[in-house]
Structure formats: C-alpha cells, structure tokens
Image 1 (cartoon, helix red, strand yellow):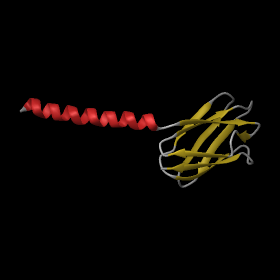
Image 2: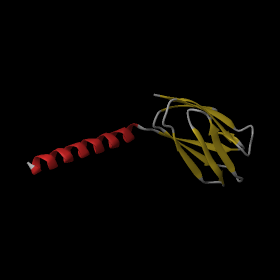
Image 3: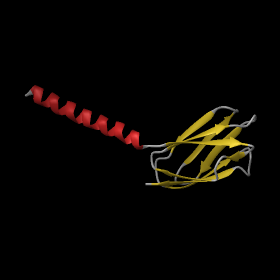
Length: 112
C-alpha cells in the first residue's frame, strides 16, 4: 500500500514537471535594442509567456519602463552593453518608454 501511494505521488510530480518544462518550451524570446535613443522596433506582437530583452546599444544609460495595466515594470538605469528582461504574463497592450529619452517609445501587443 505504501508503494502505491509513493508511485502516485511520483506520477503527479513527474507529470507536473513535464507540463512546466513543455510550457516553457513554447515561450519565445525577443531582443529590443535601444540605439540612438530609439527602440529597434516601434511595435512588437508576442504571446503570453514570451520574454523580451531590452539591450542598451548606446554609450549612455537607458531606463526602460511601462505603466500599462497589462504589464507594469521599471528596469532601472543601465549602461551600454547590458540587457534587462521582462516576461509578459497576461494579454494586452503595453506602452514602453525610456524615462531618460522622452521620444523613445514602442508598443508591445501580448496575445493569448
């Protein structure tokens, strides 16, 4: 009887782990580069669970943020060559800006 319970627990844990691994395999990663105080794209269409990396390609700092309901974040100020990453976990429209460069803006649309 104890073996049967242990076997069931192992099966549930293994199945849960497999689902977590396969879910992560479906997520995509994107890179946006800030260069000349502008994002490399103005719009991006992604899916829930996808990751976007914001790389600083300028010799001065950027501070990428969003106050959008779909995803609010502030990546802080970071120098050339560094990247900061955001996982988008719910659908919606995300307006992204740089607090240092007011004309540096883009929109990310997150679909299910």
